Length: 425
Image 1 (cartoon, rainbow, N blue to C red):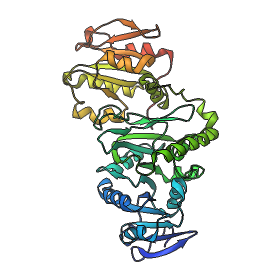
Image 2: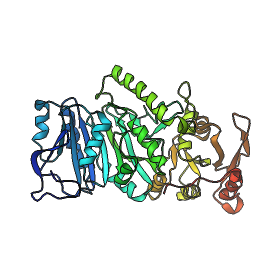
Image 3: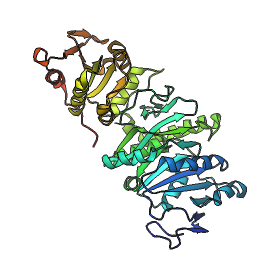
């Protein structure tokens, strides 16, 4: 086995080579100089890992990627199908090291500039890794980036995640249809699950990888995200990268509940001071609390709701872009019959963090609560009282701006109470 940064002369070493207490076999079909190292841990047999591996080529088509499979305590029979593949780096540990230690072990063998962690019960949708790498290249402060995670039943499982001050977490968007327009924008988040997680090698080394106290699994991803932020790095959610996860197949529900409760206590013990700056967990599902926590992770930029009742030649979308570029967190209330932004604006809506909702303004305000600074609507409506009694101004825009209040100037006056947010770097 050649070390990281070295190249084997024969394109791969099929023999098992000892690395400490583990054995490493590098297949002949594995690239010598990958940009990305995909890491898959196999614990309960190899069938799931093989299906996961088969999805990798479609998920990464533009850059070289090596696949590292950690045989985490697998016996000889279960391990044999993986040993017969020449497209993987097989790392065998005689005992189950857990997710964190197994991931750390794979990282020592990995040659890629990016590490990509994936559960063995997950598969990639086409272009998933390509999109994560594309986003990482454009956001150098991002230490880690996670995808949109879908369930096998056609529902959304996670669109980034929220941490509460008691250490509990909420997966944003869980239970929505997989193709829902909600949460389809790039944004900073509290953390993303380690399933589908892309980590920059330099960031990984800065925080010294996963914390192995969270044996055998759960909360190592939350701990990693907190550590990255302590180093001045960001954690991003990238909705255009997608994986499908057969949730719960890796661990029984009773054991999973035990592990999560135990490791949550360890997490709170490690980060009690920092968690004081997070929101309090609501007693039941509360969309207003979730929206506030999402905005808190983004840095609390001022929020504005824009009503778009029709395309009007793209001029309203031009306004949305200008507001987002100016530091507003924009939520668009789409009118009936208007499905998606025009092609000329679709990419910028995602990149600028614009939140699209197929709801009218009143319903959007019910979901968001009192965080909204103003509403930009196509007709003057003056103002109204929020639920807390404060005044919510409505700013007018009409087709002929010579006869209307300039919405951007009006919003600047509204925002004088506090500075505008900053964009992703």
